[in-house]
Image (tube, rainbow, N blue to C red):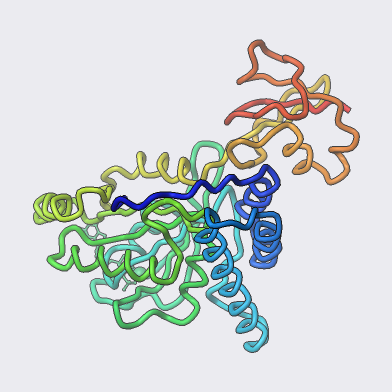
Length: 325
Ligand SMILES: Nc1nc2c(ncn2[C@@H]2O[C@H](COP(=O)(O)OP(=O)(O)OP(=O)(O)O)[C@@H](O)[C@H]2O)c(=O)[nH]1
Ligand SMILES: [Mg+2]
C-alpha cells in the first residue's frame, strides 16, 4: 500500500459489538444509533483517526438524509423497505441491463427497453434462493454528470450492491470507472475494503451472450487487473451461480427452530448474521427469551446431533436449534 505505515487500531470488544449492531441495523435510525455507539466506545488515538473520520462522515450523511425526509413530509420513493433475507440493490449507467436482470431473477414486472433512462424509480422483486427469498431492487440509472436525487440514499441503505456494466458496449470501461468513482466519492463503497460502514459490492458484466462481450472483458481485465468482474447474461448465463454469490455476499446464515419434542420448523428459517450465537438467535425469536435461556441443543454444526451447547456457541448456516429454557 504505497509504503504507507498502518497504525494499529486496537479496537475493543465493545467497539466490535457496536459495529455488529451497525451491520444488523435495518433502518437509518438504527444505523445512526449504532454509529454513535461505535464512535463513543472507540479508543481515540492516531491509529483510529481515519476510522473516526469515516464514521463521522457517515453519521452526518444519515442526518442530512433524515432532515431531507422531514422536509419532504415523509414519503420518499427512494427509500425501499427491506424484505426477505437481505436487500441487494442494482447500480449502473443507462441501458446496461439492470431491469433485465430483475426480470430474469424475480417475478417482478419491470420495464425493459432498448433505450436509456427506461427505469425512473426503484422497483423491487424477490429472488427465490433455496428455502429463502432475497430482495432485489431495480434502480434508475446514473451518469457521470447526473445522479437522481435520493438514489445515493438507496445505495447506502442496501445490504449489498450489484454494479452492472454492459460487456457488449464499447463504453463498458467508462461505465465501470464512472460507477466505481461515483460510489466511492459518495462513500457508499470502499474498494480498499477497509471501511466497516461501506456497502459490500460485486461487479456484474452483463450481456455476455453478445459477440463483443468476451473481447471487452479481456480488455477490462488488462486495464483493471485487481477488479473482479462476474460475467452474466439476462438470458441465463451464470445466473444460478450469481444467486449463490449474492447469498454469500449477504453474510447471513439460516437457522431452523425446533420446539421440544416436535419436528424442526424447516419451512421458515430465521435469518441471522454470520457469526451469530445461540444468544443472538434467542433475541431474534423473542425479546425476553434471552433472560430465560439456559442452553440450546444443536443439530448440524455440533459434534453430534442434539448436542447441548452454551449461550455463546457460534451457529452455522442450516443448523437446527432447540432453545432450552
Ligand atoms: N443480448 C442481451 N441483451 C440484453 C441483456 N440484458 C439486457 N439486454 C437488452 O439491453 C437493453 C436494455 O436493458 P434494460 O434491462 O432495460 O437496461 P437498464 O439498465 O434497466 O436501463 P435503464 O433503466 O435505462 O437504466 C434491452 O434492449 C435489453 O433487452 C443480455 O443479457 N443479453
Ligand atoms: Mg431499467
